[in-house]
Image 1 (cartoon, helix red, strand yellow):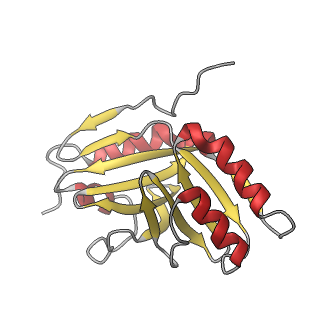
Image 2: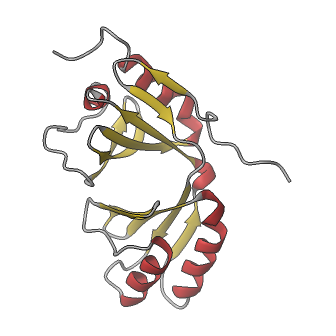
Length: 184
């Protein structure tokens, strides 16, 4: 059996903001009736938090759930816990119209940190960062590729993209964070 590695093996760039590929992250797509009692109970059992409101992410102790669409969540768990989480969600949602899929190895996660972290993303994403509240999720694009992002801390943003475009995403984030490229 091979050892799992993240898309870019933790690559980082330090410019006027720091861009880091976040490493291995457990990610599970769950689709179904988000208002259903079984769904709420199953997500809480695996993610340790309540279902998020639309366009929100709820995080607790390194686990969480992000609202992706009216019938879709992205569950975040430690990478080593994915198999057990998928099994738990699948069993809890048995008999319901639902989809549970491990997408951990199909996605890449990036952290953009520093007082000017928003400036890095402003150049790449059509999002009003002045109004983006902490914990608010946006599905958007980063340059030319699909992405989801949220403000994960005071001076920190998290961005998720497809793994197949991770090198491209890192490249545009790095170019956007180069000293001298700040927005004034």
